[in-house]
Length: 385
Image (cartoon, rainbow, N blue to C red):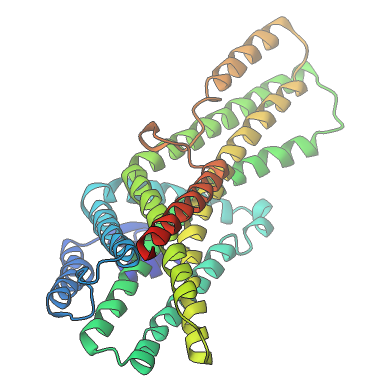
């Protein structure tokens, strides 16, 4: 959970975990300072440089290439400002409540000796992804100096692109933060599934008896309530992040296909003879990597939460086989099963019911990017003809 502090330092979230209080806390003073540092100053600097710049930042060079890049700049800035303001002032309380509840669940599980081995670095993957993304953007920022060496770029334009790519990194880190919170929610459901699975394995060879019925009914009711808890956490996550998820999805689509188009257009228009030009082009071509990977992680973790909830429901139904075959038990079991069936169509992560965040949606985004890339290349052909 320590990797959440990095998002706090980047200004993605305005609260951090207080070990003394065992909860997430925020400060109005720090929130105001973060707004100034991460929103007011960078946006003001970009606006000033756009007004005094001389290399086409304000679309002084009419071309599809420049218009496409301008779309990327505008949507990235809008997305970053909207998501950070929402995280700070509109949904921060919901986010803190959700994370505090999940951390309490993880802390309780960590204190149990029965799940100690399962708790060995459960979020190592999130830390690795965070490190890879950070290294990518450090390299991306260093790459901007190649424009000074190759094209004698002046400091206002150099500063513009350095600040813009930093803000783009913050935007991608927002998406990565949403994925991390979803991964934490998934982990709480996984712990419940592991507990019930171990309980069933311990009693796999025992035959059902009437004396065991009260024990199994307590177990079934307990984990049925865990199903409800996981369902509620998924719903709370969706309420806390739904507008942010929509803006991130839209920005990922626009930024990714613009990066594809701009770099493909540059490859077709210019030769890359020396190693510095090749390094510049390869680095910029990899710009789509964090955009699409962050969206992929959100969709993957949304699928995992849904799968974990279905797994827990199957285990609850399996636990009912440990009951004796009496009419009362069968009627009571049918009542539980009927309630869980109602959840079947409510497990998708669907902000505002616009679309479902899952792997099918991600591959649809990739297909749409390829389609728009073909369209933009046709505009390029018309432009040069």
